Image (tube, rainbow, N blue to C red; front, side, top):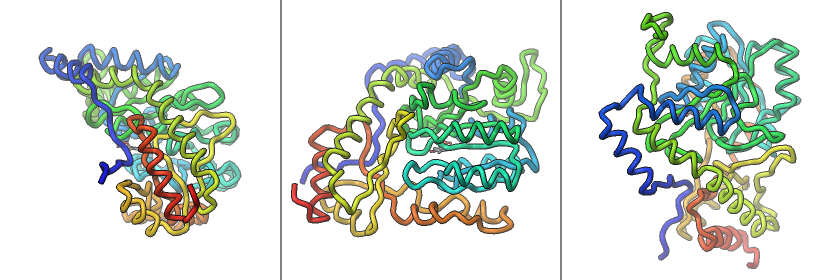
Length: 368
Ligand SMILES: Cc1ncc(COP(=O)(O)O)c(C=O)c1O
């Protein structure tokens, strides 16, 4: 039996191990030059003035919202279909999430639903998610944000290097947030995150908040906690960033391979790409009607699959208890029953992708 093909897998090479070891041996484990160098490189990559390295994507979202002025009682529009951590920072700030249904083709905020929700609640912030690596419909998001004088905080935690009309994810709103969780398109060899912005005040506020609310003089000017990224993570992150364009290109090749070999299998709806964006396929999420049987069949062929995410954010107990009523999100509710993630990472070889495709074709009885 050939090896099981995992859904996602982080890449580690000797240069990353050496960079981590050098950081360890340097004796400077936090607040050092490696975090600063990683920030500078990441800001340049995103095309923003500033980057602030933090301890996770969740921390990036929390500090981005707070630094952009979102606080208790403010209304934040969030998509219904996303990972829990898009919403938990909003609730942690005692702000109110208002859920917007998603477009089942792109898996991102539905522009019509967004306009209706905004007219209803006059939002203080919009939090689009570039889910699975595809940028949200930023033109509508900006139109709506301008009309309501709302800040735009991007959850780009799954979209390192994705572009929308030629501009990088993270640089498309007032502030953008990234996660370096190990399965993401790039990692730091553990947990980590980054927020990027052109706004010097947001960057400065986030720098204070990640370090106990301390300013350059050493005064604690705000109630911050410790959300710093350590030097080992920053050293690994800088090495990973250098590989990101090539890794993303390989992800896109794998996606093209799936489309070529599965495009004619009617029982599977493959993910679509916006014409004005470049998708970086953090995850390759298809839709099927017979998900349990589909997953079992692929497992029998040594192919792992996943479900990202089986429960919409608004249905988790920790979120539910903050909501007055269950939001009406028919597209989200239907999607979560049908989505399935096929293996997607840059280490996949053509033969492995072909094995996945053959297993899908066999399951649906479509000749090779
Ligand atoms: C869409 C989304 N938002 C937020 C997060 C939170 O990032 P982290 O796990 O680094 O805290 C993640 C990643 O897990 C994510 O995928």
